[in-house]
Image (cartoon, rainbow, N blue to C red):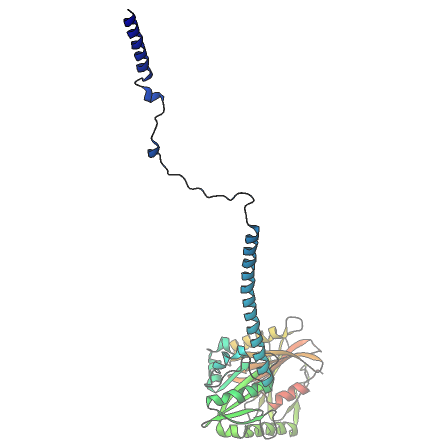
Length: 379
């Protein structure tokens, strides 16, 4: 019995042992894995420096180097700018003293006068007819060998003449002479020739004019033309005179070598008068163009020229204008194109009836036009 009992105990122990190793033990307990099968893959995280572990001195050195590099680049650009500016100023100063051109003018020196080949334009000058150079009237003027440019402000006549003395010979033009002002034998201007072709360059007001002439005319400084002008002036001074009509708002003595013709205008009873040269082609016009206070002189002039150009067969246009003062009255002087020729005009107000008048000449520089301006006055 004892044996059996003991055996029974052993059986119970065995049963307990079997019970400890239950079949479903793997479901209840976590499964152990071999250390050799563990995965060593891990997400890489940046190593953050510990607080207090920064090297402040190193960072300060980096900032200083960065700042120094920026300052160095800036200093290089500043030095280059100063050098370029200094060179630009020195060149302009030296050429200004010599009466030459500035560095800005180098490109323009390669351009030539419209209508006249091989003549370089004066630096920074502008062709007066740039916007209307394709019109017939301008083309006719250019075909006659006449061109005009507006000069920069404060340009001296000597600057223009010195410029062409230095540059025109490079285009195979030969210098003849320069006449600063007109004399009894010569017309003002600078004269050149090339083969049998002559050239006259002269400055008037703020414009420089280029005129192709013959070689003989250039060598004589247009002596024949000057003699003709003086002859006409002497005739005007010695001839007997006639006056404008008594009811005309201006008083003017007119030589017998001229004819007058009166015409009605759009301004009520006011008349215009046209004066013709008997022995020549010069003509002069005195015309009311507006009332004082109804606009500026240039506005009245532009309106009249536009109307005149549209109503008549003659071509009328304005080249340039300038405000001036003469005999204590404000005037507007203008250079005009009248029937394809070079003309001029003056706008002024009659102080008796406060009507603004335009006086024109189809022959620029005619002595009688100067006489009109000097002698015309209110009754």
